[in-house]
Amino acid sequence: MINPSAIMKLMSMKSTFENNHPKFAAFLTKVMGQHLTEGTILEISIQRPGEEKICTNMKVTKSDLELIEQLKQLNQ
Image (tube, rainbow, N blue to C red; front, top):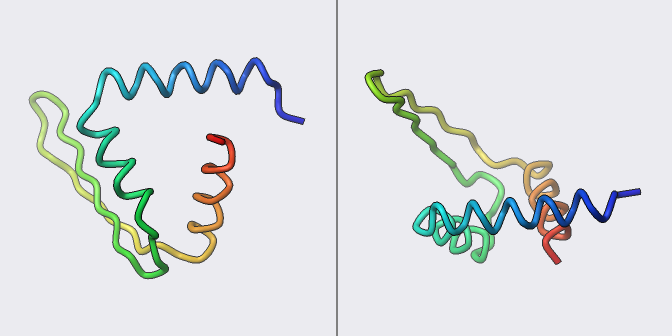
């Protein structure tokens, strides 16, 4: 069983994240609002201060879509 206080803490942290990073949060909301399909390519890059940028990507699988749906259920 999921601990209700842990969910409340997670929701509070999500709100803080959205306030700290409104453009990124809006991007995620838009992407998740559209239906991702199997075979979609997701790409992310990271550049730490003073370091070279690194980049990777992944092709969305059926199990990835199932995970996303389960995570969405936590948000309701």
